[in-house]
Length: 268
Image (tube, rainbow, N blue to C red; front, side):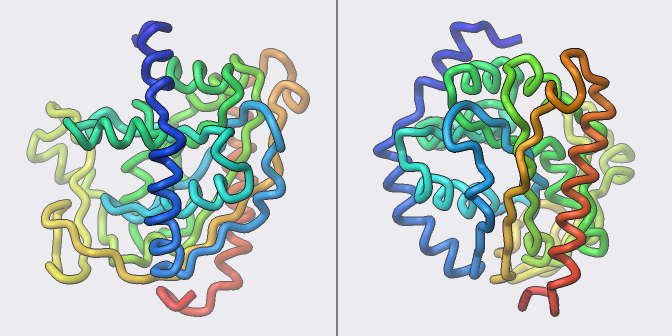
């Protein structure tokens, strides 16, 4: 468990100037490459803490944060930090320092709670890599792999959950399988690797994580949904599974609606 002091130090590493540089330089490139749209940002609470809960797409080279964050800062400015929870494995040497300066913090309920109590917005992908490597043939399915900690975090900190859905990321290459069974057979679960994803893409063809293929320029649309006040809607001591089921159902309905308007893979 991370101490309150460590959580405070993690959040304090955010550098608004550095984040502005990343958003201004990479944001337009990513937006053009994926013809990205972030819709209904006006639904975000104008002030105060909020827990943004999103599906995760695109495998190792997921563009989710680089699409959402610049749009968020364009609307709310750099006086309002957006933190993204990330797996501890990505915080390697200088890369870890750059990520923390840009607002990526190690995924833990303590880190999330600290940021939320300070009035920040926190972006979480409950499904993690399990979600981002879902099969392209099941691309429009909300699946958090049973993870519900985000609900407890929202209740304990008194912030709304803001669901966000994104479509198009699983078309950046052909995701064939998460490789759950393959990881178990190879004993990778002992090294905390629950999946060994298999995909097909450009330029390496068939890939089992490495070498990572480059993402195709699939059109990606991200949509912000209405905030959910968990305590107001479900009571002060809500059933976590009930809240999680509601959040996922709202997200699934929105994702289904986006899917009906999508004409062709990659093209959008």
